[in-house]
Length: 141
Image (cartoon, rainbow, N blue to C red; front, side):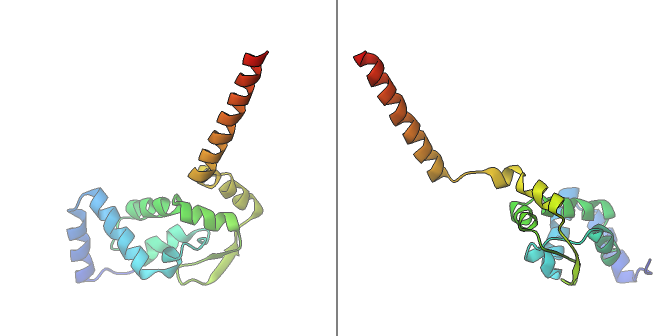
């Protein structure tokens, strides 16, 4: 582990006086500004959590893990996993691939199953028309 500088220690002390929510938000902003792989929602390399913790010693490891979990739950990230392809490290270098199983899990995620509202309206209108035809047939019989 790296030796902390006095500035790093002061930053860490100041950060720890903030609420966990504010700390998480601040860490998230820092990560998104510093690493393109997060900004572009590329599939992350396996073990990137340890790389992040090592790269950001001024922040609590638990909060870094929380930021990472929040990122990985975003629909944009899940869609990137569902597309498959390469995984990337913090420097946006290739480091592994999304497996077929991981891709399948991402494709079955609820955010990938949603339909467009227009499709829902069209389906509802079709069903309503079908019910009206059946009701007319019953009334005429």
